[in-house]
Length: 257
Ligand SMILES: [Zn+2]
Image (cartoon, rainbow, N blue to C red):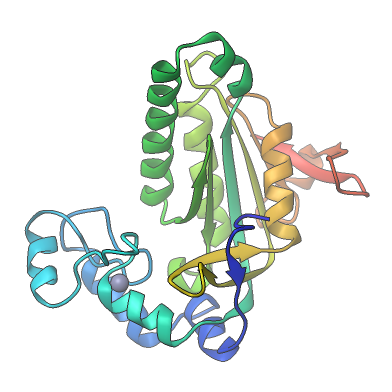
């Protein structure tokens, strides 16, 4: 449901399963460990090479500058996505965060004020998610979607997603000028390359019930709160409530944090 305009791609499932699944791909995890200490963000979504400051300049000289047609990735990773399209189902954690009452705010405010508010939201949300090791999948409108694949973030993916949710609840509480609600889930997720416009542009995206459920929980969460599905490791099932969510037949149990 995330990127209807993109075509989901299959194939190379062993490779993608290794990259995002438990343990990760040795070459990529080695890059993550190395680049992590080189300044500064933003970074390539896949290999995490830095794009700014002195580190970005040096890595640019080594062919790892932002790809012109696909600026979230470095040129090397863009070639990789081009040569190895495909995906795999991997157990991971997903987070959705979106602004409350944005339709009402857009109606009542000048468009420049709305754009400023959404930009501030995206910047703060991106910062919190990135600091908690999240892999940002998409921004659209007033919503950010991120995932924590174990191959990128380790076996404690659920704890990291929940930590991000807690920080988001503090940053966007009901009293702030940007109240936002968050949803967190864990479960099998299809993560794959997606292609747009006759293969002219590739990205990585996520699909499946675990993703849709996180979106629905985010919509059901009050401003400044997160609803964490009881499927997420470490959730206190005793404190859970049952929620009837739009488009999902059976009630879902989640904890409000
Ligand atoms: Zn890269």
